[in-house]
Structures are given as C-alpha cells and as structure tokens.
Length: 446
Image (cartoon, rainbow, N blue to C red; front, side):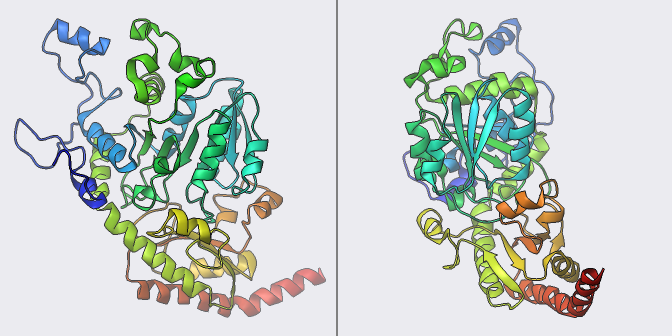
C-alpha cells in the first residue's frame, strides 16, 4: 500500500498510523505523560542533540500528538504539521515563525476578528505592521500594499462570516512575485473541500477545534508547512532560517531540514519556547474527529446550501452570503476551488435590523445560541453584538456586518428539521414586527 495513491477518506482513517509494537492496539494510545524515560546517559544526550528522534517532554513532542500531526500533514499535502493548543496559537506560531520587529504583513480584511486583533494589537506591540486589503479579489490592491519590509500575505479560504471565497492562486502568485509566502487559514474549508497548498499557498493554519474535531469537545490548532517556499532565494530576508544556528552546530535550518525548514524552526524555536501544547487527550479527540471528517463536511455543506437556498426566498431576508448560490459574488471562485461545497458557515441579513435578529435568534429551538463553528450541531450567532461588537458601526458596515446579519454554522441534522426551526425564527420576527414598528415611531417622535 506504500506506493498507492489513497483516496481522502481512506487517508483520513489510515494516514500516518504507526502500529503499536507493544500491544497491537489498532487505536493509538493516549500518552498522558509529561516526560519520557531515557535508556541511559547517552540516549538523553542524543535526544537533546537531535540525533535521536525519541521523545523527551510533551511540550516538545508527544506520540499521541504526533499521530495527529502526521495525519493532518498528509491530508493537507504538506511536509510537516505542528499541533498546538488552539487556532489562535496556530496563527501566532505561524506568524512568529516568519516575522520580527520592523516586518509587515498584508492581510485580507475579511478574516476572523481574533486573528485581526492578533495582527493589530499583539504583533503591533512587537513592532510588526499590517495593512488590510478591502477587496480580497483585487490582486492589484494586494500588490500595491507590499512594502520592502513585507514578509507575509495572510487570508482565509472561506472567511467568517461572509463566505467570500479566496482566490488562492491569484493571491499566492501575487505574494510570490513580492518574494513572500502566503499563509492561509483553512479552518472553515478543511482539506476535504480544498487543499490550499495545491493552489500555491505556503503555510496553512487551522483551528482544529472546529470541523477537524467536529464535536465541540476539545480545543486544538495546527500549522502545516507546505514545504514549497524557497527560503534560500533571498537568504537576507530569512536569516533565522538561512543563517548559521549554534543549536544546529553552525548549520542553518534550511541546510539541516531542507523543505521542512520553516516547520522545524516554528516547532523548535517558537512553539517549544512559548509552549501552546495541547493535551494528548484533546489530540485523541481530534484524531477521532478527523476519521469522519469527509462524511461530516459533505453533510454540513449539503445542509448549508439547502438552507441558504431556502433563505433566499424568505421575504424578511435582504441577502444571503453563501458562495454556493448563483447570486453570490464569490460563486465563480467557489466553483473553481470548492467543487465539493462552500462549507457550512455563512450569514444572512434580516431587513428589521438588530430587533429582528434578536427576535429570530430567541425564537429558534434546535439551533444552539453559542460562539463556536464546525460543530455537528447547528449554531447561530449575531456578530454585530458579539464577535464584532468591538468594531465601530462604520467598520462593521465596511465589512458588510449589518445589524440584521445572522451567522449560521449548519450542522449535520436532518435539513427538514433545520428549516422547520428557522421558520420558528421567522414566525417570531413576524410576531414582533408590530412592536418593532411602534418602537421605531416612538423613537422618531422623541
């Protein structure tokens, strides 16, 4: 089987598995151990020198976590993956593996608010600047934002909550012309819907707490090195990877690790020092989720498209942001990059603003009101008053986050039940409509 090209579902179940030589267990063990024994003095020295690949301490590596890393690297067609404690940790490790004070990032504006805060506030305090491209499809705007100190492009394959699909190849080619890597957050698409590395991305990050895990039971994040960016093409720009390193006996990371240079540095110097280590038990939960990833995401995507199509016909709805719809500005990109589906996270906007959104969200029973995504259960949230509450009304308007916008993460339930529940929301909006109109008139009189 070593030379066979395996299908996605086969690989998600079998990929990266190492047999249990001691007991023959088919499911890899959960190694809940902080440290690992050395056979003798020399083995301890060799492991710390890196000439023995065994484990020393779970912050630096753990067999359970490594099983997940191998599997995700295979699914994303990368050369190596690093498992960390959350999606935010994954983004942080990826950025700090590339950037230093004085550097600059060009990012899509349509990204997760937590990542935006990381770029603006946390990295900003470290002397790293960022510019946001308003229209991710405008490749000239990406190119125009480049400075001499630009070191990375960043975007999401399917941004939250607008489902405005990324032109991965176009942005990757623009980044490469500028001599920098493209970092892509593939959380909402997962490798089942698209593998960004195949379209030119260099580094992929995931919040594994979402679809990869799938059951809302544990946190995790992954950084995947695509292994395709040539760090030696401009060695003066990447001295931490191309210059001699004392820990490597004077060799550089590129010399020692070749196409895994970034992953090795991000693991050994960034993640190992900062310590965003996931619990091996969370890694076990994540591995269990990955084994059914394709089955769940296929159902998620089919349900979401059916819901989006139904919402388009509701009179209270002014817009539905789902790239699977012909009405979406991203429909052509979805057809190009996401033939299996445009994911399950999208938004729709009610004409009645926040009051209508509140009535709708309080009116549903099956959808869970919570801040999470990618769960087998369907979830609902009002971004303007929660995830985007820290933005000004003008900033929200620029991103299309209307007061009446509602975000859905559609689960794997029977779609007929989901539509019936959403109808409860619309019934609540209709029932509240006279009161909303009265409040509006009273407000005008005052």
